[in-house]
Length: 189
Ligand SMILES: Cc1cc2nc3c(=O)[nH]c(=O)nc-3n(C[C@H](O)[C@H](O)[C@H](O)COP(=O)(O)O)c2cc1C
Figure (cartoon, rainbow, N blue to C red):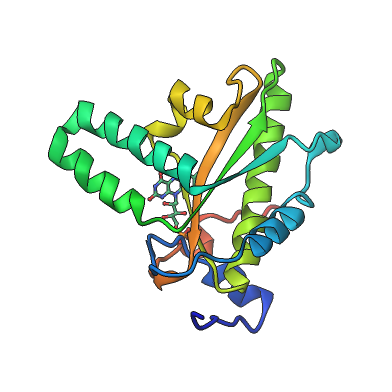
């Protein structure tokens, strides 16, 4: 079992959570943990309690079909070699889930519902990170392709894809920075 990174405080968890790009090969984190993360994710704030989110847990067959669809998109833009490299890389991703948000004709509702889904995504991230499970939120071209929706059996007039999320035990935890707080904070009288 991969060693668990432990966080001593919520400060450490929030600032220590990183987007994981490289996952260990070997065991996929237990589905029960992912289901528990979803259970917690839905406690995110959401205006008018719309609960606009849907979580799709993808099995290997669907994951493979998405990897192939993505390779097809890469092939059209960048050729066969690039497509094969992408397919190899995506074939090694341990866990896959997709978060969608209900669509709305009301732009304000659509914005607030999307915001709520992003809060839910952060809940997912933080819980899994605390459990030693890394995650990456991806929004590449593939998530906007109609065939992606078809693979999930999702009607694009009803739901919009917020992101494709990969998860697994981190092979490498990157470092990153944030701007000094003075650059982003304004204090008013
Ligand atoms: C809406 C959204 C979409 C993202 N899409 C991608 C993506 O397509 N590819 C990628 O490498 N990272 C993606 N990321 C991850 C960001 O690049 C990452 O959060 C950022 O570099 C900060 O790193 P950190 O998450 O470790 O703090 C996305 C993040 C968000 C919030």
